[in-house]
Amino acid sequence: MPDQYVMRDPTTQYPKSGPEFSQQQPGPGLQQQMGPQPDAGEHSYRGTGRLTGRKAVVTGADSGIGRAVAIAFAREGADVVLSYLPEEEPDAQQVVQLIEDAGQRAVTMPGDVTDEAYCTELIETARREFGGVDVLANIAGKQQEVPDIADLTTEQFDETFKTDVYSLFWLCRAAVPQMPAGSAIINTTSVEAYEPAPILLDYAAAKSAINTFTKSLARQVAPKGIRVNAVAPGPVWTPLQVVGGQPASALKQFGAQTPLGRPAQPAEMAPAFVFLASQEASYVIGETLSATGGMPTP
Image: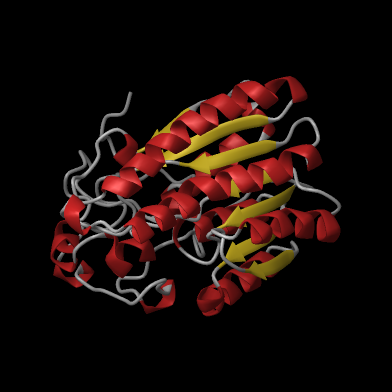
C-alpha cells in the first residue's frame, strides 16, 4: 500500500460508502469486527522522526482516530501511553504490537475517561513510566444519535459531556504541571461544531465547547511554552459510527455529503495530529485544524 507521501487522487484514494457500511455493533465496539476495515495507517503510515524522544498520552487509542494517531506517533519516534475502555482490549493489543514493531514503548492503561481519578492516574502513569509527558492527544469521544430532544436522556447528555469535555479538563489539569516548554496538547473537535446534525444535539454541543476550551487554555499556557490546538475531523469511518453514532440506514451514504464524496479513514487524520505535536507547529497556538473533506468551517 502506498504511504502518505505518494500522490494520489483523494476522490478515489479510499472507497465511498455503500450498503456494506450499514452495520451495527453493541458499544463500545471493536474495529477488528468492522467491515470494511478502517485504515488506521497500519500498512501505510511512514514516519520520518518528527517526534523522536517524545512521551505521548493518547486517549481512545485502541481504534479509529486514536489508533491511527498512536501508530503515527510511534512511527515518528514517540513512546505512547494508550488509554481505552477495558472492553476494547483486543483492538488495543493490536496497537501495542504495532508500536513495539516500530521500536517504541507502549504502556496500556485501560479505563474510563469519565472517571476523574482515572484521568489523573493516566497522566501519573506517563510520568512514572516515561519520566513525564510532552504530548497529550485527547481523542476519546462519545456519539449517540437521538432524533428527538424529548428522547435525549439526562444520563446520555451527562455521559457525552463527561467523555468529550470533562475528560479534557481533568487530563489537561493533570498534564500541564508536568509538561516542559515545547509540549503540545491536541484536542479533538468535529465538523459537527460548525454544521451540527439534528440527531447529534449533545455531541455537537460538546464539540463546540471543545473549540472554546482549546482557545482559552491555549492563551493561558502559551507563556509556559505549551501549545494547545485542536483537530476537527469530518465524517470518519470508525467504530463510533457503528455503535449508535449514526442510524444503520444512514451509513450506506456516510460521507457522501462531502465534496470528496466519501468518508475519511482514520489514517487521513493522523498527519494533522503529528504536525500539531511536532516542533514544526511551534507558532501554531489556539487553532483548529479542519480535516473535513471540503465541508466548510469558519
